[in-house]
Length: 234
Image (cartoon, rainbow, N blue to C red):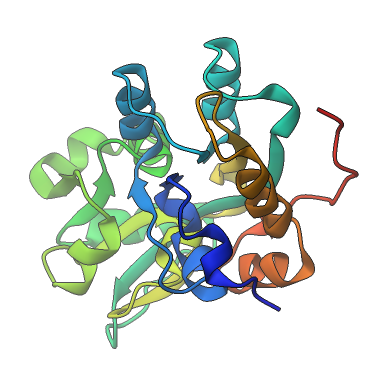
């Protein structure tokens, strides 16, 4: 069961785009500021504050080191891998093996990945590692915003993004995850920010993210929930 939205209405929440589908499914209408992890880290470094922040695990680690979050409030949320998507209704290419994936990438008229998101950085390095960058030449579209929107508009034939970011977007079809031998995954975590003056409500929000309802929404949105563990004192 979802919590009462008014319980969290006064919270300022910063979140990576990866949890957007989960939060929209479980607490629809809640105002949350969504951005890529690197953009959020820069914003926080520049002085932005909130009650709750949701980032990659590495991002939360950085905020712990910087004294920006309360370490004892940190919770692990889940992990997601990188997937490939095409415009809704388009033919789904074969990416079932590494060789098939490479053929599909080379045959595509255009390939999109993000500039700032974790998946975009990972995919760019993967193309380089596979020796595909020079062969793709100018067919790679690097976009600041969500890759799914570029695919849905038809601007790119296919694109790579975290599966959990692709899952809630209309207008696209997910082809599948990257081949196992080149798949990468990223973990997400959340914490209460040190500057929060609403720590009880912020902690209640984090507690909700560990409930069965939230974890069901994670699975629906192609996130693998982290094992539930007892809340640490603090």
